[in-house]
Image 1 (spheres, rainbow, N blue to C red):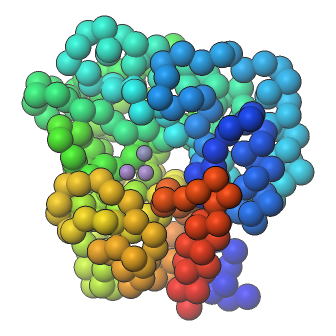
Image 2: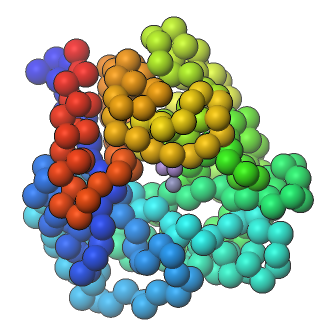
Amino acid sequence: MGNKFQQLLGAHTSIAGGIWRAVKKADKLGFTAMQIFTKNSNRWQAKPLTEKDIWEFKEKLKESKIKFVVAHDSYLINLCAKDETILKKSREAFIDELQRCELLGIPYLNFHPGSHGGMGERKGIKLIAESINFAHEKTKGFNVSSMLELTAGQGTTLGYTFEQIAEIIELVDEKERMSVCIDTAHIFAAGYDIRTPESYEKVMSNFDSTIGLERLKCFHINDSKKELGSRVDRHEHIGKGFIGTGGFANIMNDKRLLRVPKILETPKGKEQKEDLVNLRVLKSLIR
Ligand code: ZN
Ligand code: MN
Ligand code: MN
């Protein structure tokens, strides 16, 4: 089918009622890729996964057409928290998330690098890398990759430039365990213009020379409610925001990135009908 090569596409899907339910739902919606939380994203604690949870999840996945799963970590985790108690809790929770992924056979744990809360960017970056090294040491030999997500740079959040992401990876000992996710709304709000073929090409070659395209293992495909460089993180439906369909056409037709899964995190109701509309828009952009 030439350019119609089946790209892995899907959306973040709720695990309400059990992790396996998310797989059923995503498969029913026709996704080939999906993102989940492996626990309640607004809580520190989670019940340990049971053998049954794990078995059901793996079985449903095998029966489905889903070929890529990424887990998103809890929003509470801050790997460069200024408060020592929060930092300790964050590290423990992060390790727990790595363990949950490993048990479920999920190959990527996506996370926001962290918010330095005023300690300064340099210190924050160092602390994030220390936290990752600590977590990796506690999870020796795990297959799950730690996936740094590019951010919008809202407040004191780090990871809003390619350089910052590269610096974190540089400070991590087990670099083979590191991967990167581009969130289109985030990088756009951070000032990376992907709207025209020319500006997009500049952004991607910058990514390649700073981080390396081989580390890019996932896209969060979101339009942005806020303008270029606003540093504000607000997701919008595809084509309805400041990025517009042109920007997404650049991504969907980038031959280097056909094998990188693309996952929506756009607003949706319980039935996720909005996801189907957004996926239709994305597919229509493939030339
Ligand atoms: Zn995220
Ligand atoms: Mn995202
Ligand atoms: Mn966001």
